[in-house]
Length: 124
Image (cartoon, rainbow, N blue to C red; front, side):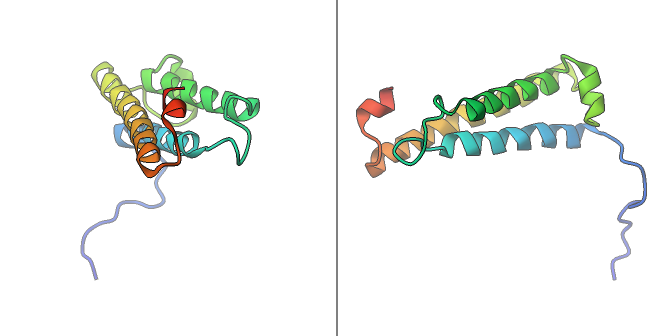
């Protein structure tokens, strides 16, 4: 039996810096995973042709920017998130941008190496 306190499990939820950053990063990671793994032709429509999916992905990315930079603090409050301090805003933004870009590049390089993507599609 552990003698450490696990905290008050019945306490009211209090937003803090950690859960705010975790929420923003995890939603962005899920968005990246979905968009980058979406294959399009010949299996389904291309992402640009699937307007509802494309718009919802763009909306989600924009919404994460609003939450990250605290552009509309009342939205952060409504989602039980803190407005991030300015220095941390930039760091979180850089992390999610680097994750997005590097994940896309790694995906395309591996597709090219494995032969399921030719050079013309890599450029386009």
